[in-house]
Length: 142
Image (tube, rainbow, N blue to C red; front, side, top):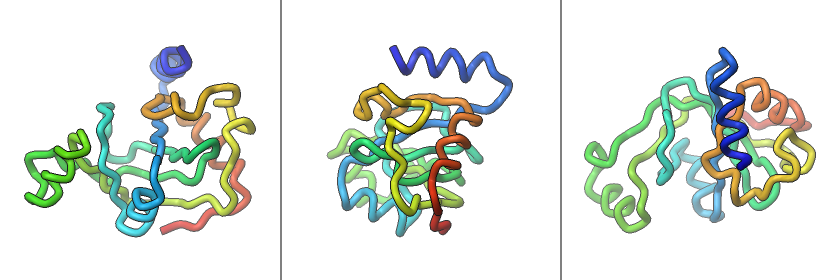
């Protein structure tokens, strides 16, 4: 239900949508912030310049701006196998990432009251994404 509400709100607005991705494992988070890449299994309108927020457990840990998306067929063999094994369909490469120095609890954001597990792939408005980013006391930009 939350996804539908956010999606309807984002579509009514003239602002481009932003998205939320859930990071489940430490190694995926390290890969994201060191290599600026994230393998994705959820289909959305990922495009250059799109803002993405990252949630881990019950807090937002950072945000990024998409540079490009590499489709499964365009990946090297090793990455293609990895994607097939994990049911991912491609790789997002980020132009810019910001790690929040002190994660922002979901309960302190416009997404409060929602199960963080259900936020994966959620569409939110750009203004809500900016509000969440503004709640971070500091950001490490890479």
